[in-house]
Length: 405
Ligand code: ATP
Ligand code: MG
Image (spheres, rainbow, N blue to C red):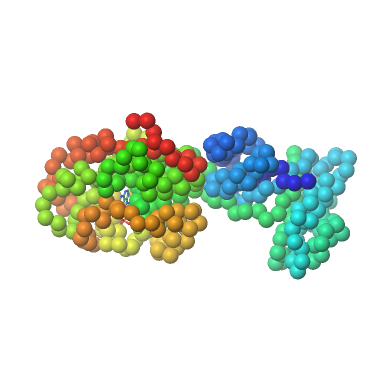
């Protein structure tokens, strides 16, 4: 007997009363789409606080990996799924057989175990605790596992007895948590080559927003060579979390060329406002209701409160900054967790770096607006030209492809 399903326990949306079905449907649809993108074509079924799917054995691990990154899941595991226990002629025997199959596969020497039962099938007379005792004894009698420890077990065997099916598993993995993508309004995230912005985009996808990405490149990126572009590769990696999405690569070259006058420490701030406006245009086009950045308060001179307020003042859409109160170590830990750390650690020539000079730490929106009129001729045309040159990359399941122009 070996695992034949993935059992999935949804995250916090179980708390949302009558909306629960809607959240569940979103999670199911999102999961099916992600599995399909990986060539795993199976329905995701269930309800009542757990979902499951039955990929062929050879695809079980790949499916687990996809589900692990999908927002809206608290825990998940490969499991042995069995038909309903109540009324089954063998009673609990199949559950014990499944437990023994899992127990015998795992080294017991010097290790302690526990059994946890969740019994939502109330047709079974025994309580969860009685079942735990019974299954615990069955494991001790039929395998090398001898030492029970309910407080700090090395391994916990889980039995979930539901009216429609039972699931036997151990070593569940933590899911991504949060809410299924589609539960919140879409967002446009400003993505750079650094550690911060991929984490910011991922965190908001985990709050249920479909997130599209926009990057400003220091030079035009050639269509044929886009797979070599580091930010495109970061975007592809992010798609494992965000689901199917797009990256718009815009050139910052027109901005650089248009910027006149001697450097005065406001250039990066003008570029930030330009980025915000371009992102706002894309948001309008794609029905997004806000912009995301990887800013963290006072991390660098451009991220003082005053400078962020100056960026905010350039657009009407809200700018969300999920990393605002985190320090670099916390952000790096998240980047490692989501798998973007190694890519973001590679050298990349960001367009901001080309603007030189440390920005001023205190800016005033009205003054920046004056400077924009003075130093950037024909702003609307500049913005339009930049947007017209967008290279759009399709991202899904860790892969990237160039969208037709
Ligand atoms: P990160 O680590 O994400 O690169 P950073 O430490 O380099 O950020 P800044 O350069 O000040 O910080 O950028 C702040 C935010 O502005 C980034 O998190 C990102 O959201 C946005 N941003 C910066 N550069 C770009 C770019 N070239 N294209 C798109 N967005 C950018
Ligand atoms: Mg940063």
